Amino acid sequence: MKGKTVFITGSSRGIGKEIAISFAKEGANIILNARSHVSEDVISEITSYGVQCAVVLGDVSQFDQAKEMIKTAHETFGSLDVLVNNAGITKDQLLLRMSEEDFDNVLNINLKGTFNMIRHAVPILLKQRSGSIINVSSVVGLAGNIGQVNYAASKAGIIGLSKAVAKEVAPRGITCNVIAPGYIDTDMTDILNEDVKKAMIDTIPLKRIGQAQEVAQAAVYLAKASYVTGQVLSVNGGMYM
Ligand code: NAP
Image (cartoon, rainbow, N blue to C red; front, side, top):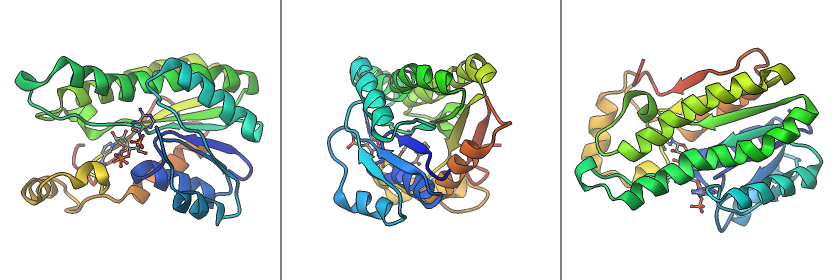
């Protein structure tokens, strides 16, 4: 990974931040992203590993902003080697109460955002004849979940999208894979009440919540795995097999 450029969407906190740190430890230059702010603490943690770090703010759900972000990222370090589509949101509600707006928002950020970033990155990767795309799905995209019709649809969509992309770009030596995390300790899951958390842990064979670093390890593996493409790697403590 030394000297490679890795762009991680939604890397101001949580899983994306840990993915960025893991790639920095491997010697890669890092492009961080969020919609409006990335703290100085995150930037200085990345640069403490002796690599370069740039921030490209923007909303992945906006096609033109995605185009600008990829262009800026490519120009910043002169290459684009790994794209990790990690940015994602939840707007949970039972189907009968789910608004059209909450369905559209989740699909637009999670699924269309992934498409937008790949759509603009692929011309660069094709020209380069190398690169790795890693998309963050979820156990919910594989198994479904009550109250998450929008999120499950977006995360299952990412899997189909990734397999189609993998087939299209493979002739140029580019890989495209998916990580499907289970229940991971971040702001996204922190909002759940203690009873829900306990009930969830009971369903996990490894009997604990996962750490963002454990998802990050999978991202580094996939970026290096030159003969692995179109795959879904579950990082879920055995929650769904
Ligand atoms: P998180 O702590 O809520 O962080 C989400 C990140 O995405 C933030 O940096 C956020 O920054 C950014 N973001 C959100 N919308 C964005 C947009 N439109 N454009 C650019 N950046 C955006 O979430 P997390 O738990 O780390 O989750 C990361 C990914 O893993 C998500 O795709 C999530 O669905 C997936 N996942 C998480 C879990 C879990 O248990 N935590 C399990 C399975 C899958 P701003 O809000 O400042 O823009």
